[in-house]
Image 1: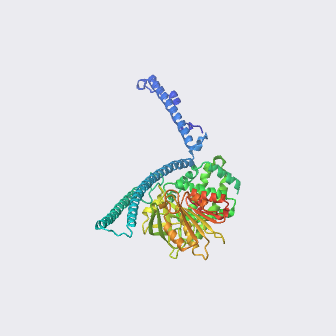
Image 2 (image 1 turned 90 degrees about the vertical axis):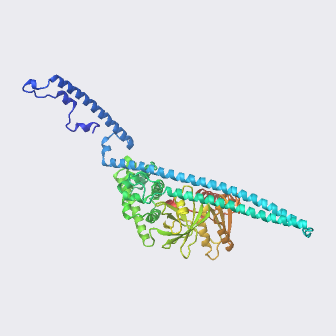
Image 3 (image 1 turned 45 degrees about the vertical axis):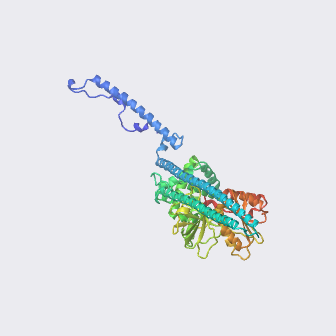
Length: 230
Length: 370
């Protein structure tokens, strides 16, 4: 089968027929058209038809060329392209490309979710690091003070406060240390609670984000439906 | 059956890479639209599974015994997806059509007959194994979450009550599907030896962007019903008289090893066990208090925590380096579980240090995983 066989097989009007067509003359010449203008018009129609046919042939060839490219075959036999199987293979290709799109959507969504959790992890590490540093500073300070107090106590061992003034000074120091430890305990507590709140806040956001990208079970691509993201 | 020709035609088809499974699934879904619902939206991982299974099958196509074993496993494993006998015919048709398409001119009637015969053989083993399995086991177990405890920032321990009772060997894993992420199955190891009440413990680490781990660490509240596949995996205790044990656990790779340690506690005279438990940072040593308590009650167990970054309650450095530095292990039995890279690295270095291959046991999900 050649590429332009599709119009030859049927009895259709051709430019050649226009060229050679003849009409029976009317009995009284004055009731017929003048032959020359009719001929001239027909020749215009003929030229137009030739142009159309050429255009169609070249479009047809273009269609064939593109189809061959899509099917990835250099097989010149056009008949192969018209089997029932080829319609199926064409459908397989369309579905495959839709599947690839769906895969890409899911991969993108997963990458996005991955970035979110990674960021959260990094920020959490930062905050925990800072908290750890803070706690370290507080502890060191408290330890230094405790050591100083212990040293002071040892220095005074066996020598009870001699005067009221000295006794008052020791009491004042003790009161200071108690207050100090109380204040810092409060400080540390508030700080820890704040960190916990921040983490809970993130958790809430993470859950909300997870809900947002949720699609009811059963949703997804079937045939050519647009892909859903889960 | 011309096996050489089957193999060479498969090699020819395989050259087209991902196009092959893509074509196969599109062909199947067009001819049998009802099968689409059995798969997740993204088919990327699924295609890799299919290719891996095909490669394994074709490689062992002339080894009747291992082929039968593979196909039987595959048949049993497919029950949890709701695979029915009639699906096998549909899959066979699409598979042969796909091979024919990619073989091009090399395809002929003889090859088609051979491929059909090969497929029918494998499918019949799969169907028979699935039918036999039906007599003893459900297609999947329903696992009700009874507790979820967050042990670290990104690690949760899930206690699940399966129905009916699920029998397994410590070291094995199961595929889990969460109702929040239907049709996505991920493998997790049981982290406990079988208990009288049948409950199972899983250690779930939230992987960045991991759909199932996120569902299990945030959505799986008490009462959530998970689907659980049959136990799989070849990692199991194989103690030899007089041989001590080295265990290397990276992060949640601890799970299967902890199940084995619990199992050892039930035998009369357990061998000495050296368990290295590694994590990136100290808070990743999520189960350390429990392990240390267990070690205090069982003198044969020594737990060594290893942290690669920052402060450590034990040793500091890369897990593998630390293990290699800490002793001469070639006369030990080694059990290694954790991130793939760490497992492979540890196994290779133990082997290089003179440990016989038969004494190195690593977590191996086989072809059906990942």
